[in-house]
Image: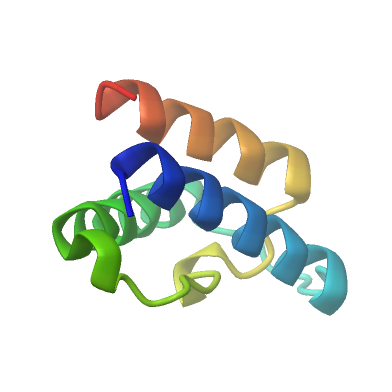
Length: 82
């Protein structure tokens, strides 16, 4: 799988997971930790190539709303040159 496909898969699965599980946490999520986890997940996906497993929403992103998550994914993609 190419890096663009890995990125799109990460974005789609992460967003779908958030929509299905909802965000009911009362504590404020750590957006920086979420972004770091997404970047690590992207690095792993790119290195794995065709052998990449379907990514899931990182635990660090628990409670991050969909709009913020989409923004973070966009930032991670830009920083990785995608």
